[in-house]
Length: 89
Image (cartoon, rainbow, N blue to C red; front, side, top):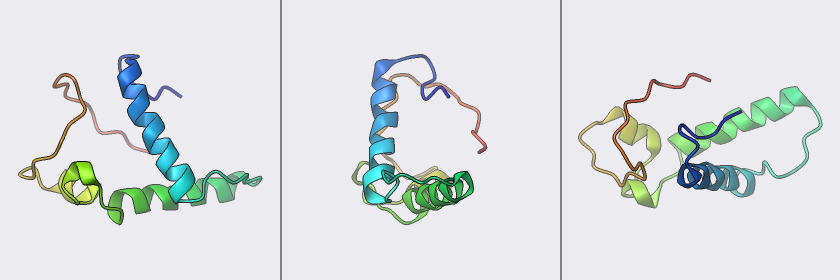
């Protein structure tokens, strides 16, 4: 699976930061031997990350809140303005 858009190492650092947060804050660093359980735990962790966890870079807001309100200003790590299609998982 490709984690970056343009093979930019800076983008990979952001993806790795998110992976680290999911591993250490949501308990995903433990070995889960059942694929179905691993998928469910990951789904719950991503939901927590997006809907319950506040982020300093978003002004102590949740990602879902910022995503739904285009008037909220937040720090962007993107080097250029690229219009991306929404990723469905």
